[in-house]
Image: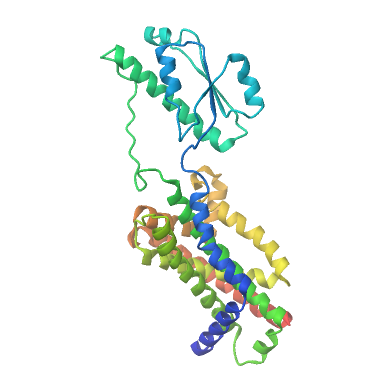
Amino acid sequence: MRLGHIWVLGIKELRSLARDRGMLVLIVYAFTLAVYASATAIPETLHRAQIAIVDEDHSPLSNRIVSAFYPPYFKTPALITHAEMDARLDAGLDTFALDIPPNFQRDVLAGHGATVQLNVDATRMSQAFTGSNYVNTIVSDEVRAFVAHYRETYEPPVGLTLRARFNPELTQSWFGAIMEIIDNITMLAIVLTGAALIREREHGTVEHLLVMPVTPFEIMASKVWAMGAVVLTACAVALIFVVQGMLDVPLQGSLSLFLVGAALQLFATTSLGILLATFARSMPQFGLLLILVLLPLQMLSGGVTPRESMPEGIQTLMFVAPNTHFVLAAQAILFRGAGLDVVWPQFLALAGIGLVMFGISLRRFRAKLGTMV
Protein backbone atom coordinates (compact mmCIF):
# COMPACT_ATOMS: atom_id res chain seq x y z
CA MET A 1 0.00 0.00 0.00
CA ARG A 2 1.21 3.49 -0.87
CA LEU A 3 -0.41 6.60 0.52
CA GLY A 4 0.49 8.43 -2.67
CA HIS A 5 -1.71 6.09 -4.68
CA ILE A 6 -4.63 6.64 -2.31
CA TRP A 7 -4.18 10.41 -2.51
CA VAL A 8 -3.98 10.54 -6.31
CA LEU A 9 -6.91 8.17 -6.79
CA GLY A 10 -8.92 10.27 -4.34
CA ILE A 11 -8.19 13.41 -6.35
CA LYS A 12 -9.38 11.55 -9.44
CA GLU A 13 -12.67 10.80 -7.65
CA LEU A 14 -13.09 14.47 -6.76
CA ARG A 15 -12.50 15.51 -10.35
CA SER A 16 -14.97 12.91 -11.58
CA LEU A 17 -17.54 14.18 -9.07
CA ALA A 18 -16.95 17.76 -10.18
CA ARG A 19 -18.05 16.76 -13.70
CA ASP A 20 -21.23 15.09 -12.43
CA ARG A 21 -23.69 17.99 -12.30
CA GLY A 22 -26.52 15.84 -10.99
CA MET A 23 -24.55 14.81 -7.93
CA LEU A 24 -23.35 18.36 -7.31
CA VAL A 25 -26.93 19.62 -7.38
CA LEU A 26 -27.95 16.85 -4.95
CA ILE A 27 -25.17 17.77 -2.53
CA VAL A 28 -25.99 21.48 -2.59
CA TYR A 29 -29.72 20.83 -2.22
CA ALA A 30 -29.31 18.29 0.60
CA PHE A 31 -27.32 20.69 2.78
CA THR A 32 -29.12 23.95 1.98
CA LEU A 33 -32.73 23.91 0.78
CA ALA A 34 -33.53 20.50 2.27
CA VAL A 35 -32.26 21.58 5.69
CA TYR A 36 -34.15 24.87 5.55
CA ALA A 37 -37.35 23.20 4.37
CA SER A 38 -37.17 20.50 7.04
CA ALA A 39 -36.78 23.14 9.72
CA THR A 40 -39.55 25.45 8.53
CA ALA A 41 -42.07 23.36 6.58
CA ILE A 42 -43.79 21.90 9.65
CA PRO A 43 -45.37 24.76 11.64
CA GLU A 44 -44.09 25.08 15.18
CA THR A 45 -47.48 26.15 16.52
CA LEU A 46 -51.11 26.07 15.47
CA HIS A 47 -51.78 28.66 12.78
CA ARG A 48 -55.20 30.04 11.73
CA ALA A 49 -57.19 26.93 12.52
CA GLN A 50 -60.93 27.17 11.86
CA ILE A 51 -63.09 26.82 14.97
CA ALA A 52 -66.86 27.07 15.44
CA ILE A 53 -68.54 27.54 18.82
CA VAL A 54 -72.04 26.57 19.88
CA ASP A 55 -72.80 28.89 22.79
CA GLU A 56 -75.92 27.54 24.52
CA ASP A 57 -75.20 29.36 27.77
CA HIS A 58 -74.78 33.00 26.65
CA SER A 59 -73.20 33.88 29.97
CA PRO A 60 -70.24 36.11 30.83
CA LEU A 61 -68.08 32.98 31.17
CA SER A 62 -69.07 31.57 27.78
CA ASN A 63 -68.51 34.99 26.16
CA ARG A 64 -65.10 35.09 27.76
CA ILE A 65 -64.24 31.69 26.28
CA VAL A 66 -65.44 32.72 22.82
CA SER A 67 -63.31 35.86 22.87
CA ALA A 68 -60.21 33.85 23.90
CA PHE A 69 -59.91 32.31 20.43
CA TYR A 70 -58.24 34.76 18.08
CA PRO A 71 -55.46 34.92 15.44
CA PRO A 72 -52.82 33.83 14.79
CA TYR A 73 -53.58 30.46 16.42
CA PHE A 74 -57.25 30.41 15.40
CA LYS A 75 -59.44 32.25 12.97
CA THR A 76 -62.23 34.34 14.46
CA PRO A 77 -64.73 31.77 15.83
CA ALA A 78 -67.91 31.16 13.86
CA LEU A 79 -70.93 31.24 16.20
CA ILE A 80 -73.27 28.50 15.04
CA THR A 81 -76.25 26.52 16.28
CA HIS A 82 -76.20 22.96 17.51
CA ALA A 83 -77.94 21.78 14.35
CA GLU A 84 -75.21 23.25 12.13
CA MET A 85 -72.28 21.67 13.93
CA ASP A 86 -72.21 18.20 12.33
CA ALA A 87 -72.99 19.51 8.86
CA ARG A 88 -70.11 22.00 8.98
CA LEU A 89 -67.69 19.32 10.16
CA ASP A 90 -68.86 16.96 7.40
CA ALA A 91 -68.34 19.70 4.82
CA GLY A 92 -64.83 20.42 6.09
CA LEU A 93 -65.65 24.01 7.04
CA ASP A 94 -64.41 23.63 10.62
CA THR A 95 -61.55 21.73 12.23
CA PHE A 96 -62.89 22.25 15.76
CA ALA A 97 -66.43 22.66 17.05
CA LEU A 98 -66.78 23.62 20.71
CA ASP A 99 -70.17 23.09 22.36
CA ILE A 100 -70.78 25.09 25.57
CA PRO A 101 -73.90 23.61 27.25
CA PRO A 102 -76.75 25.54 28.92
CA ASN A 103 -76.20 26.66 32.54
CA PHE A 104 -72.46 26.22 32.11
CA GLN A 105 -71.47 29.22 34.23
CA ARG A 106 -73.96 28.30 36.98
CA ASP A 107 -72.59 24.76 37.23
CA VAL A 108 -68.99 25.98 37.26
CA LEU A 109 -69.58 28.41 40.11
CA ALA A 110 -71.57 25.78 42.02
CA GLY A 111 -68.75 23.28 41.64
CA HIS A 112 -70.94 20.72 39.88
CA GLY A 113 -68.28 19.67 37.37
CA ALA A 114 -69.56 21.31 34.21
CA THR A 115 -68.50 19.74 30.90
CA VAL A 116 -67.95 21.20 27.44
CA GLN A 117 -67.75 19.13 24.28
CA LEU A 118 -65.02 19.50 21.67
CA ASN A 119 -65.59 17.90 18.25
CA VAL A 120 -62.51 17.55 16.07
CA ASP A 121 -62.09 16.80 12.38
CA ALA A 122 -59.24 14.32 12.77
CA THR A 123 -58.69 14.03 9.02
CA ARG A 124 -56.61 17.19 9.46
CA MET A 125 -54.24 15.23 11.62
CA SER A 126 -51.54 17.81 12.33
CA GLN A 127 -53.98 20.56 13.35
CA ALA A 128 -56.23 18.09 15.18
CA PHE A 129 -53.43 16.76 17.36
CA THR A 130 -51.92 20.12 18.23
CA GLY A 131 -55.13 22.13 18.34
CA SER A 132 -56.92 19.86 20.80
CA ASN A 133 -54.31 20.67 23.41
CA TYR A 134 -54.58 24.38 22.61
CA VAL A 135 -58.38 24.38 23.01
CA ASN A 136 -58.19 22.46 26.27
CA THR A 137 -55.59 24.85 27.67
CA ILE A 138 -57.50 27.98 26.61
CA VAL A 139 -60.82 26.81 28.08
CA SER A 140 -59.17 25.66 31.32
CA ASP A 141 -57.29 28.94 31.75
CA GLU A 142 -60.39 31.04 31.14
CA VAL A 143 -62.49 29.01 33.60
CA ARG A 144 -59.77 29.16 36.22
CA ALA A 145 -59.40 32.94 35.87
CA PHE A 146 -63.16 33.45 35.95
CA VAL A 147 -63.65 31.37 39.10
CA ALA A 148 -60.70 33.04 40.80
CA HIS A 149 -62.49 36.38 40.36
CA TYR A 150 -65.40 35.08 42.43
CA ARG A 151 -63.41 33.05 44.92
CA GLU A 152 -60.33 34.71 46.26
CA THR A 153 -59.21 31.46 47.89
CA TYR A 154 -59.66 29.36 44.76
CA GLU A 155 -56.66 27.21 44.01
CA PRO A 156 -56.37 24.78 41.11
CA PRO A 157 -56.05 21.16 42.26
CA VAL A 158 -52.67 20.75 40.56
CA GLY A 159 -50.03 23.34 39.80
CA LEU A 160 -47.72 22.35 36.95
CA THR A 161 -44.39 24.13 36.63
CA LEU A 162 -42.80 23.39 33.24
CA ARG A 163 -39.08 23.79 32.72
CA ALA A 164 -37.77 22.79 29.28
CA ARG A 165 -34.04 22.19 29.10
CA PHE A 166 -31.82 22.74 26.05
CA ASN A 167 -34.76 24.16 24.01
CA PRO A 168 -36.70 26.43 26.39
CA GLU A 169 -39.14 27.71 23.75
CA LEU A 170 -39.73 24.21 22.34
CA THR A 171 -38.77 25.51 18.90
CA GLN A 172 -39.32 22.65 16.50
CA SER A 173 -37.09 24.09 13.77
CA TRP A 174 -34.04 23.43 15.96
CA PHE A 175 -34.71 19.71 15.94
CA GLY A 176 -35.77 19.53 12.29
CA ALA A 177 -32.65 21.24 10.93
CA ILE A 178 -30.17 19.13 12.90
CA MET A 179 -31.89 15.83 12.15
CA GLU A 180 -32.05 16.64 8.44
CA ILE A 181 -28.29 17.13 8.38
CA ILE A 182 -27.75 13.87 10.28
CA ASP A 183 -29.94 11.96 7.82
CA ASN A 184 -28.33 13.57 4.78
CA ILE A 185 -24.84 12.68 5.97
CA THR A 186 -25.78 9.00 5.84
CA MET A 187 -27.69 9.27 2.57
CA LEU A 188 -25.01 11.12 0.63
CA ALA A 189 -22.18 8.99 2.00
CA ILE A 190 -23.84 5.87 0.62
CA VAL A 191 -24.99 7.49 -2.63
CA LEU A 192 -21.69 9.16 -3.53
CA THR A 193 -19.43 6.16 -2.91
CA GLY A 194 -21.82 3.72 -4.53
CA ALA A 195 -22.27 5.99 -7.55
CA ALA A 196 -18.50 6.47 -7.82
CA LEU A 197 -17.96 2.72 -8.11
CA ILE A 198 -20.82 2.21 -10.58
CA ARG A 199 -19.54 5.18 -12.58
CA GLU A 200 -16.26 3.30 -13.03
CA ARG A 201 -18.15 0.42 -14.62
CA GLU A 202 -20.40 2.58 -16.79
CA HIS A 203 -17.53 4.73 -18.09
CA GLY A 204 -15.30 1.74 -18.72
CA THR A 205 -12.49 2.91 -16.43
CA VAL A 206 -12.41 -0.30 -14.38
CA GLU A 207 -10.02 -1.76 -16.96
CA HIS A 208 -7.67 1.15 -16.38
CA LEU A 209 -7.64 0.46 -12.65
CA LEU A 210 -6.96 -3.24 -13.17
CA VAL A 211 -3.82 -2.61 -15.23
CA MET A 212 -2.49 0.04 -12.85
CA PRO A 213 -0.08 -0.87 -10.03
CA VAL A 214 -2.71 -0.26 -7.35
CA THR A 215 -4.39 -2.65 -4.93
CA PRO A 216 -8.14 -3.02 -4.23
CA PHE A 217 -7.50 -1.53 -0.79
CA GLU A 218 -6.02 1.60 -2.33
CA ILE A 219 -8.91 1.95 -4.78
CA MET A 220 -11.52 1.54 -2.06
CA ALA A 221 -9.72 3.77 0.47
CA SER A 222 -9.44 6.55 -2.11
CA LYS A 223 -13.19 6.52 -2.70
CA VAL A 224 -13.89 6.49 1.03
CA TRP A 225 -11.72 9.48 1.88
CA ALA A 226 -12.69 11.53 -1.18
CA MET A 227 -16.46 11.14 -0.84
CA GLY A 228 -16.24 11.38 2.95
CA ALA A 229 -14.34 14.65 2.68
CA VAL A 230 -16.98 16.10 0.36
CA VAL A 231 -19.85 15.21 2.69
CA LEU A 232 -17.96 16.36 5.79
CA THR A 233 -17.16 19.73 4.20
CA ALA A 234 -20.76 20.20 3.08
CA CYS A 235 -21.95 19.28 6.58
CA ALA A 236 -19.70 21.87 8.21
CA VAL A 237 -20.82 24.57 5.76
CA ALA A 238 -24.48 23.73 6.39
CA LEU A 239 -24.09 23.88 10.16
CA ILE A 240 -22.33 27.25 10.07
CA PHE A 241 -24.17 29.11 7.33
CA VAL A 242 -27.61 27.46 7.20
CA VAL A 243 -28.30 26.20 10.71
CA GLN A 244 -26.50 28.88 12.72
CA GLY A 245 -26.73 31.63 10.11
CA MET A 246 -30.07 31.48 8.29
CA LEU A 247 -32.10 29.55 10.89
CA ASP A 248 -30.40 31.04 13.97
CA VAL A 249 -30.27 27.66 15.73
CA PRO A 250 -27.85 27.67 18.67
CA LEU A 251 -25.46 24.71 18.75
CA GLN A 252 -24.81 23.86 22.38
CA GLY A 253 -21.69 21.71 22.00
CA SER A 254 -18.44 21.63 20.10
CA LEU A 255 -18.75 21.69 16.32
CA SER A 256 -15.30 20.10 16.01
CA LEU A 257 -16.33 17.19 18.24
CA PHE A 258 -19.47 16.66 16.15
CA LEU A 259 -17.41 16.61 12.95
CA VAL A 260 -15.17 13.93 14.47
CA GLY A 261 -18.25 11.81 15.09
CA ALA A 262 -19.47 12.58 11.56
CA ALA A 263 -16.13 11.43 10.15
CA LEU A 264 -16.48 8.11 11.99
CA GLN A 265 -20.02 7.77 10.67
CA LEU A 266 -18.81 8.50 7.15
CA PHE A 267 -16.11 5.83 7.48
CA ALA A 268 -18.81 3.23 8.10
CA THR A 269 -21.44 4.47 5.65
CA THR A 270 -19.09 5.07 2.72
CA SER A 271 -17.93 1.48 3.14
CA LEU A 272 -21.58 0.42 3.12
CA GLY A 273 -22.09 2.36 -0.12
CA ILE A 274 -19.29 0.43 -1.81
CA LEU A 275 -20.71 -2.84 -0.50
CA LEU A 276 -24.12 -2.07 -2.02
CA ALA A 277 -22.50 -1.04 -5.31
CA THR A 278 -20.82 -4.45 -5.62
CA PHE A 279 -24.27 -6.05 -5.64
CA ALA A 280 -25.74 -3.64 -8.21
CA ARG A 281 -24.85 -3.59 -11.90
CA SER A 282 -26.51 -0.26 -12.67
CA MET A 283 -27.66 2.91 -10.97
CA PRO A 284 -31.36 1.87 -10.98
CA GLN A 285 -30.47 -1.35 -9.16
CA PHE A 286 -28.35 0.62 -6.72
CA GLY A 287 -31.26 2.99 -6.10
CA LEU A 288 -33.55 0.09 -5.19
CA LEU A 289 -30.97 -1.36 -2.80
CA LEU A 290 -30.52 2.09 -1.30
CA ILE A 291 -34.23 2.32 -0.46
CA LEU A 292 -34.18 -1.08 1.25
CA VAL A 293 -31.18 -0.12 3.40
CA LEU A 294 -31.49 3.62 3.97
CA LEU A 295 -35.10 3.79 5.18
CA PRO A 296 -34.66 1.27 8.06
CA LEU A 297 -31.37 2.92 9.05
CA GLN A 298 -32.99 6.35 9.34
CA MET A 299 -36.42 5.36 10.67
CA LEU A 300 -35.15 3.00 13.41
CA SER A 301 -32.05 4.89 14.54
CA GLY A 302 -33.89 7.09 17.04
CA GLY A 303 -33.89 10.29 14.99
CA VAL A 304 -37.54 10.13 13.93
CA THR A 305 -39.01 8.49 17.04
CA PRO A 306 -37.37 7.76 20.40
CA ARG A 307 -35.70 4.37 20.57
CA GLU A 308 -37.41 3.71 23.89
CA SER A 309 -40.78 3.54 22.11
CA MET A 310 -39.62 0.72 19.83
CA PRO A 311 -39.79 -3.03 20.61
CA GLU A 312 -36.80 -4.25 22.59
CA GLY A 313 -35.77 -6.58 19.80
CA ILE A 314 -35.53 -3.67 17.35
CA GLN A 315 -33.57 -1.62 19.87
CA THR A 316 -31.05 -4.41 20.31
CA LEU A 317 -30.79 -5.14 16.59
CA MET A 318 -30.20 -1.49 15.70
CA PHE A 319 -27.10 -1.33 17.90
CA VAL A 320 -25.22 -2.97 15.02
CA ALA A 321 -26.13 -0.04 12.76
CA PRO A 322 -23.84 3.02 12.77
CA ASN A 323 -26.79 5.44 12.57
CA THR A 324 -28.00 4.56 16.04
CA HIS A 325 -24.72 5.53 17.68
CA PHE A 326 -24.29 8.60 15.48
CA VAL A 327 -27.76 9.93 16.32
CA LEU A 328 -27.11 9.42 20.05
CA ALA A 329 -23.76 11.20 19.85
CA ALA A 330 -24.97 14.03 17.59
CA GLN A 331 -28.00 14.83 19.73
CA ALA A 332 -25.89 14.76 22.89
CA ILE A 333 -23.29 17.13 21.42
CA LEU A 334 -25.43 19.59 19.47
CA PHE A 335 -28.53 19.64 21.71
CA ARG A 336 -27.11 19.11 25.19
CA GLY A 337 -23.52 20.29 24.87
CA ALA A 338 -21.98 16.93 25.79
CA GLY A 339 -18.23 16.46 25.65
CA LEU A 340 -15.98 13.56 24.76
CA ASP A 341 -16.36 12.13 28.27
CA VAL A 342 -20.04 11.50 27.48
CA VAL A 343 -20.00 10.40 23.83
CA TRP A 344 -16.83 8.30 23.75
CA PRO A 345 -18.82 5.00 23.88
CA GLN A 346 -20.70 6.03 20.73
CA PHE A 347 -17.45 7.08 19.03
CA LEU A 348 -15.84 3.76 19.95
CA ALA A 349 -18.86 1.86 18.61
CA LEU A 350 -18.75 3.86 15.35
CA ALA A 351 -15.06 3.11 14.90
CA GLY A 352 -15.61 -0.60 15.52
CA ILE A 353 -18.60 -0.83 13.17
CA GLY A 354 -16.65 1.14 10.56
CA LEU A 355 -13.69 -1.25 10.69
CA VAL A 356 -15.96 -4.27 10.36
CA MET A 357 -17.94 -2.69 7.53
CA PHE A 358 -14.76 -1.65 5.72
CA GLY A 359 -13.34 -5.16 6.03
CA ILE A 360 -16.51 -6.81 4.69
CA SER A 361 -16.76 -4.31 1.84
CA LEU A 362 -13.08 -4.71 0.93
CA ARG A 363 -13.42 -8.48 0.78
CA ARG A 364 -16.49 -8.23 -1.43
CA PHE A 365 -14.89 -5.52 -3.58
CA ARG A 366 -11.71 -7.56 -4.08
CA ALA A 367 -13.73 -10.62 -5.09
CA LYS A 368 -15.91 -8.69 -7.54
CA LEU A 369 -13.35 -6.31 -9.01
CA GLY A 370 -12.36 -8.64 -11.84
CA THR A 371 -16.00 -9.29 -12.80
CA MET A 372 -16.93 -5.60 -12.99
CA VAL A 373 -15.33 -5.15 -16.40
